[in-house]
Length: 243
Image (tube, rainbow, N blue to C red; front, side, top):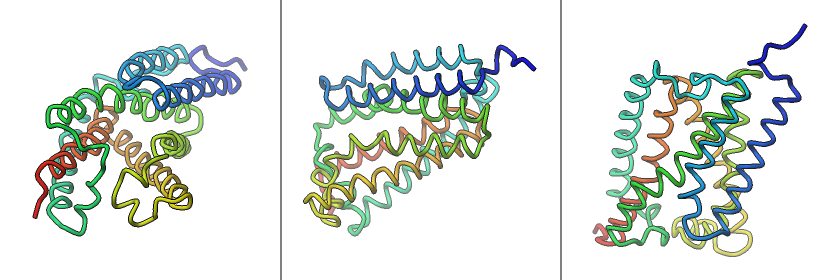
């Protein structure tokens, strides 16, 4: 029995999957060690390349979470996700015991720089590529051939590993993490492992949101709210600490 053109063989799937992972690994290294804001340029370009690869591999727009049919449900989920994160963050910032989690030296920014980062750098340099790659292309590839469960697990594990490099200094820049785990070698290793585990679990949540809504828009909104609103609140607390 021959395979249809829009259903690549296992070998071809493995090659495509490997190519996507290799591209993401290269972007991750370049973003960490390359010029400042490399991701702001590379993110949209690589996201487009990955979509083209996925389409050539036979994935539909629905497989990628980009179908027009799911735009309205995705928008509803997106608004709900942003609202939920805003409420949770507001409560967390108001309670002294949890406010320390927002004390991160990376977000001690001028208000103008914070707005630019939250509404330009985070969406284009972080959310766009990560959602297209992990909840779009990788999820779609594995889901087509192994089903939703394997797709969510694979995507989420890779999403966790993706955060190894960004978390190398986490124990030093985040007061809550540094205080809890320490800033020595052991503390840094635990912080990295914790970041990988946390983002992998977050990946599962984002995959489920993507599955329920059928749209990348929902996952992207939750992803942006988690990063963007957190940055804005951390900046506000650093500028005008609550008493």
